[in-house]
Amino acid sequence: MPALLPRIEGRILVLRGQKVIIDADLASLYGVPTRRLNEQVKRNRDRFPDDFMFQLDAAEKAEVVANCDHLHKLKFSKVLPYAFTEHGAIQAANVLASPQAVEMGIYVVRAFVRMRELAVVHADLAKRLDELEQKTEGLTLTHDTFSRNTRAQLRQLIDAVNQLMAPPDPPKRPIGFVTHEDKKNKKP
Image (cartoon, rainbow, N blue to C red; front, top):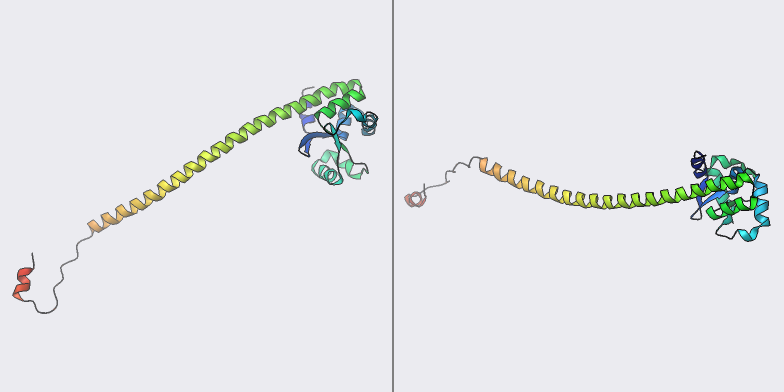
């Protein structure tokens, strides 16, 4: 039965910020028609507060049908489906009280718990990745500044070496008449 967990986890959706399972999927897991599940829920409405179960609106139903291929039959249903949270799924198993519902209720709870654990692990990984990204960004800025400064300094050094290597300009012969005093004042 552990192979059921991935199958059940695939049926768990996030709606209104909560992890839920749609009534059709829950009824299938519990081995009852969706109509029977919803009848039992309506008969025991006081066992299902709003944080255990809620009814989807038309937009949410359309989104679920569009994103979940296995729920394509809901498209033609005139009834808006219900979404059960982890606690609502347990309560549904209790009100159905069939052996399959009780047994599958345990697996449904395990699937919700495993997804919660995975969410914590993913949150930790996301935090670590964010820290790594911040460090990398800091290193990139430092490297860019260092690289820019180094390139500028190398350019100055190359220019200075080129100036030293260039032959000096030959002395130019003065234009005009040169007197003896100009020749004496001129240092060799």
